[in-house]
Length: 279
Image (cartoon, rainbow, N blue to C red):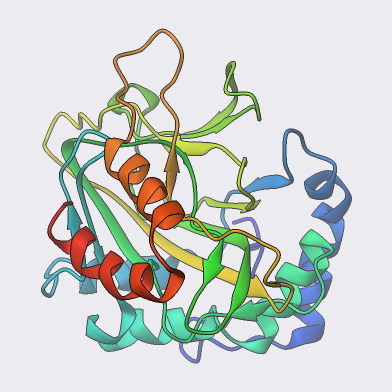
């Protein structure tokens, strides 16, 4: 069997920082040269027994941290690590540790990456049959730590998934004129990409597994201490694909108007409550 890209010990979930950097080095040039933004896909990423144990634990899921069922993100739920079973929770901590940061810094060329101990927006993501996530650019600012979002890591948990079952991860060009690349969410495939306000991506094709299986993934986000007050923070920005029935995100448009009209301290207090109410 081919050696895993990131060969952590399945029992301890440990690897040395030196070995992690060595694993990333061969792919660094190709990753950093990708257009329209740096990205890469890695099959057989972890020792497969690691994700087999995760799948076994996730047969029973706790209460979801968040749940979306609107035009732009349909039948999508997420589960934060602290509510997950012990082995899966430990894997998240391992992917927030110094060795994995070393791997990502070597791969991306981004120095000073910072993991998110709060796992805001991260965790186990599940898209049920009939669900999808439209093309978007992610929120760009970690308000609690005042950091700039720089990198997303996705590891897929779907055995023997076929392209025709939907849910493929898509990379779109910066002008939203067309799809540049697509990755089927195969078991033990890792997709990593640099994030910005125009790194358009998503899984817009409806999940339609013949036996009703959901699309499942591990999602983690990484930051740098490069945010400054000249920058404008934003939440998730959705963009309709040309020639499709994708809908404009009216909710975000309303919030953009409120950000422009209200004093910043008032908007910061009101925004979370309004989002929970779908306003």
